[in-house]
Image (cartoon, rainbow, N blue to C red; front, side, top):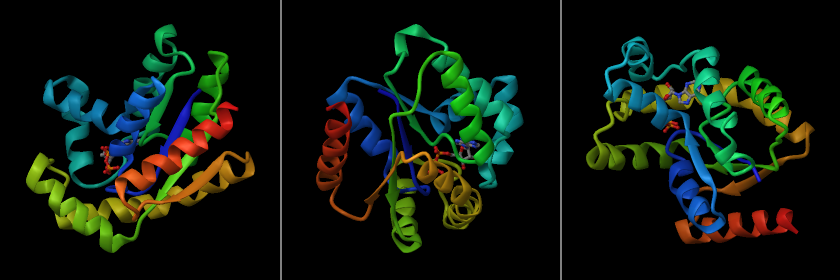
Length: 190
Ligand code: ADP
């Protein structure tokens, strides 16, 4: 099964993905982590994208598309991927469908974690203390939220149309969200 986990920055996508990975034996594909790795390893791509990420804007659809193809094309991950932070634009959503099609796969469910801007600000400033991400300060966090608001609506509409979208309250306790997600996944596993 392939899952998309969707929601604003600080919604808890990473936390929930890690839980699903363990429980359902899947692989987490976080485009944010892949991009940060490029920066950490000082690759050519890393130097190109660091200023974009630190301004709260999105990296180009082409760059992230190339990064995810490496995963989708790899047989060891076939039908076992959680897409965390991808797709974020309608172009990415369509690219993902085409790519999965090409490798005879599909998305089984899209889980959206819904969280208010107020909660996001609080969570991101806590995360800033723990993880020291260069894009986790108040100003850039708000910018990232605005970027999300601008690009997410068409993506949501796209998944509503294909009947894949399930919305979960991301403000609940972590364990509560865990069990809601498990319930949804169990239901589609049949
Ligand atoms: P968050 O969801 O908390 O913003 P991520 O780790 O998912 O954190 O992403 C961090 C940054 O990486 C984003 O603000 C963006 O610049 C870039 N990024 C991640 N995923 C994508 C994507 N699918 N398309 C374009 N840019 C992306």
